Structure formats: structure tokens, C-alpha cells
Image: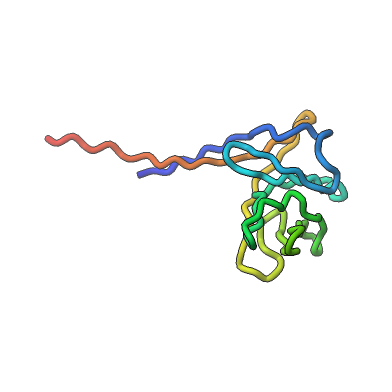
Length: 127
């Protein structure tokens, strides 16, 4: 068996449609993605929208901030904080969130999603 990884850059929005120092929820393929424009840092981040603490789709409504040099988002319900660049939980818990690469080109924001496909080797012919 061999696992093939395919990365696709999907258009998320126009830069002018983003909320400054905040987030929006997008559905790309079958995933709810939280896209953040951290204006004060001039940086873009994308994470899963689900807070793993109570499994609620709410992170896009979280408050942005920094812990030292680490950009973070706080869940608006339970105040669990997550690093936007790595997904690490900064509240001391063992849960983490998935993060996605983001790029901006020609006034458009793109998010990279990967898919994995496992291929099976053909059965050798009997001789």
C-alpha cells in the first residue's frame, strides 16, 4: 500500500471581505474552517472551527490576541486558548486544533486542504 497526499489551494474569500482582527466561518469541501485576519500582525490563519473542549463550532467567533510572540484565539464560550500557527492548546489541556496553510494572492485568500488516498498494489500474476 502507498499513501498519496494531494494538496489543493481553495479560494476562501477576497481580502476586502475579511473581518479585521477577527474571524469568519467558511465551509470548504466537507470542513468548517475558521479564517482569521490578525490585522495588528498583518497575518492570516486558518484552523478548524470546532472547539475540541465541548465540540462546538465556534472558534471563528473567538477573540484574537498574543501570548508573547504566539498568535492565539480564545474560544468565546469557555476561554480555552489555541495557538493559531501550530494549533497547540495554550490553556494547559491536551487538546489541539487542526491548522491549515493560508496564502494571499492578487487580493484573494486561499486555504490549503490536503487529502490522503491509499493505493493498493496490484496482485502479482501467478505463474
